[in-house]
Length: 146
Image (cartoon, rainbow, N blue to C red; front, side):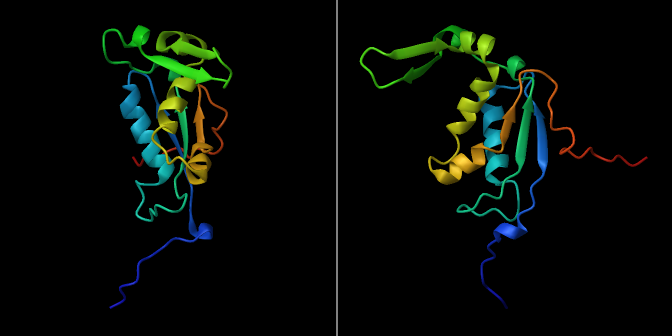
């Protein structure tokens, strides 16, 4: 009986493209699903020290579902340049109006590892505000049998 643990090699990793529709789906649940696909946790060949995940295309980011009564106004995104007094805040409502892609990207980035492996995983994410995306050639259509 062979009891050695299988570790995938970089040449053995097969990546596919997954398209997810964000319309009406809660932001956190969508981001959690995207992060799992980017990490490759949905595959049998998952390895925590390797990037074995798939590419993810998220469409309709501007129509993502937000739970909570006051979350649109009260949830804030912060950025700081490092200079005194340069803290900038943007509410979720403004961020969805101006850059809806960044809302999903920010949520997914927080769920990935905080190192070079997480950065390489994040590069496989593509988010679009509307229903159209330029990756139709990469995405295989499901073949339905009749």
